[in-house]
Amino acid sequence: MTNAKSTPIRRGLWSSRMAFILAATGSAVGLGNIWKFPYVTGENGGGAFVLVYLLCIAIVGIPIMMAEVFIGRNGRHNPITSLRVVAERNLASPLWRIAASVGVLAAFIILSFYSVIGGWAASYVGHAAAGDFTGQSAGAINELFSGLLASPLTLLFWHTVFMALVIFVVARGLKSGLERAVTILMPTLLVLLLVAVGYGTTTGYFGDAVAFLFTPDFSALTVDGVLIALGHAFFTLSLGMAVMMAYGSYLGDNISIGRTAVTVSIMDTVVALMAGLAIFPLVFANGLEASAGPGLIFQTLPLAFGQLPMGGLFSTLFFLLLLFAAWTSAISVLEPVVEWLEDKLFIGRMGSTLAVGSACWLLGIASILSFNEWSGYAPLGMFERFEGQTIFDLLDFFTANVMLPLSGLLTAVFVGWCVAKKSLQNELALQGGSFALWYTLIRYVTPVAVAVVFIYNLAA
Image 1 (cartoon, rainbow, N blue to C red):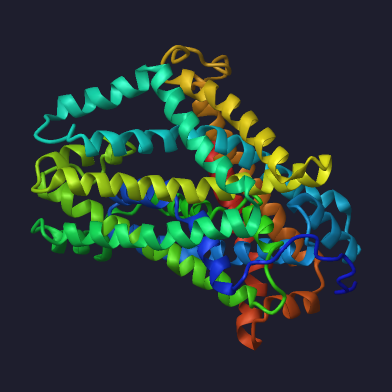
Image 2 (image 1 turned 90 degrees about the vertical axis):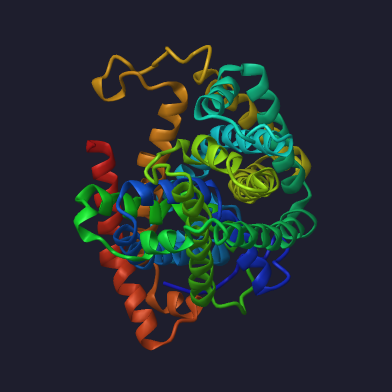
């Protein structure tokens, strides 16, 4: 086996380690952090769940992120070609590229419905700015959300706006598009999040939120809660979608993959915890349920903002924060698919982005109709497991529960068992005990953990 890098660098490089960190963190920091993390924490007992989640980030998230970035940088191509190149250098079967193929396909499907949800965030910025939440009852807030979902044309409009924002950034390439966007959006997002946390301190319930998030109550943690923490740790870092392979292909050889992956994971986790510190004081101040589920952001929080001083201003800032988080994630999800098409068809960056973005937009219409005109249509309803599940539900289920863990599992096994140990040591730039720990995790612990989540999600 060899570590030779005969493949020339075919694209530009991130201008600095910080540019990559901002881009990777922007990818990781999405709706999962600001929308999903708070409510799954609320549903699973708070502090004990957070503690398990942090452990899962360490044993699953960081090892796979490092493996994906390694493949991207070592291959210097689109994710599928990069994995094939790395496999051939290590005398392994080129069929291992299926790990990246599954990830790229998952990214395409996910973006189609992620754009629809991103459109919800965009529409709520307008509602908040117009003062539509101020003094409203729970029934009125629920009616506002129900009205949004019931209107195919309204959803289509916001889905189109959001997808256009994503296409605009990715079409401009690495330096003028991705890098410029994240260097503006990520600092802005962090400032908005700090403002939101600061607002939470004025409610009188900030201490309750801190206690809820950081005081472990293991009696409230179930086996299901542990497995949810493990699954969320995997998904929150944008793993299994070939995103980190795509971003890794732009990473300079002088940058430590190990230290960079740890930094991204820490920043992602900090943002998730800050989101909790911003959201739960509002929930507790209004006597609402912390375990409100997916409706926490679009139903519970607007009600809370509507009853608080300066709620109109801060709800606008909050939904702008949510929009920016969705935007930075979406551009990263589009990138691996565009990279692949750009290499395959040679139609240029602009043509590839427009083609992939348009196809995602078109598939997204099926998700839009799942909330209204096709809400009673369950394509796999003949199977008990999928009874009543719409097209949106099925796309979400198969990507989150089958494709992403499968891609992550194959990647972990490939890097842990097929790539030369010396090659990994050179690329990851980890010292002694740190490398030994990562190598043990990627070979033995991480694949087992992902396989457990995989099997659990399929059997649930």
